Image (cartoon, rainbow, N blue to C red):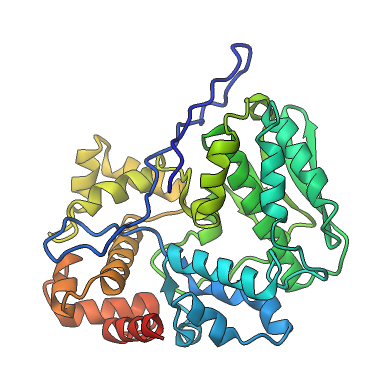
Length: 386
């Protein structure tokens, strides 16, 4: 169930940052598999298998059965052996929920002391009664400081900039660093939900090291795409920076919208209030309507957007993207959606994502994900039937 997005109204004295944009269209839960004659596949962004390796670190350290946890989320354990493999947002959210239930820990064994299930919901129940975003963030961080011993979250303000800062209190293990990144991401998602719009970030500092690029179609990491800002890795402390004026926005959620939000968490944190205003996302939305045809060239796309090819290249370069990488990632995500949610023959899947030759589709899909399309579908069918 989705919550209707309420537009928060800022006080007249508030200066809203120029890059503030209202939320884009909210993705809804797919109710049924698309028919063979349906329109373009949803082609939602997928998640790199690297994130799977990171989120199961704590479970592996504690000796849990990783394969069983993955199968609960309909994820083939064999995908962990493919560095370029991808999973859907729904699968990743299902893994988060499954691990939380099985391990009785909202941070999945990543920290030295478990955070009992229910802490997140309890904190959110308190936040909806706060007047402003600043009140809510301070109340939420106060509550989490009672449960966290490996790092301490603080909200700081200085020179018109607000910072969510995580102060380390334990050795810098890979588990703790991923837990910090997860906490920052979830706190940002909740803040966006409380004011019902995306808060543009001025920058993100992560104590974790930069992930190794595995030759995928995009130079952006999943983390950079989610935050849509510069991410600096290997920093002394994990921190999110944003304009302090956003702290004055009123909290527009209440007890009735809270239950719907909790029912759809964590999936909604992965999909809600994405920034659809950047040029790469505008291009992706346009290309989705032409997937089963020859995709426009960069010059044709520039003409559609009323830009020169040079300007289009420069603006995409500023966002860390390339035009070919956008086309490749869209085809990859569309192919994954079709393989997982339809029974279309592989030749039809190839045609639906713009390949006239199945052999070319096979080569491209294996380059994108590390496995052939038929093998990917077979693995997912086996896990779904298990």
